Image (cartoon, rainbow, N blue to C red):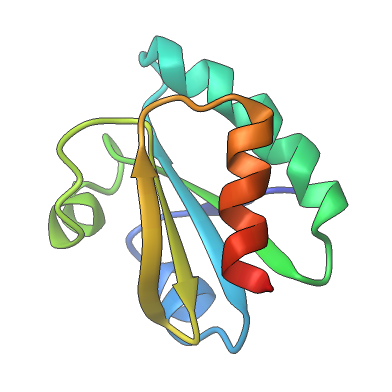
Length: 107
């Protein structure tokens, strides 16, 4: 399972219209902490396959989406259920913290 790359044109279809839990990692290529979170999210995409759709959105390329969700610092991870934002966290987190975040939202 790969992490789905989002942009302004597919965000609605992939996240807001989804009938599943979707995790979105808001990042930028130049962001050091974002580069720490990215491999963890990719790794967790395998673990949570079929339970959570893992996605990432480059805020530099899709600033309109980032602005809509009030993203002011990155990395920011938001969790959506049935198209509604239900939770999120700011900043790079270690893998166990990200797993706990996902687990509490899918159980």
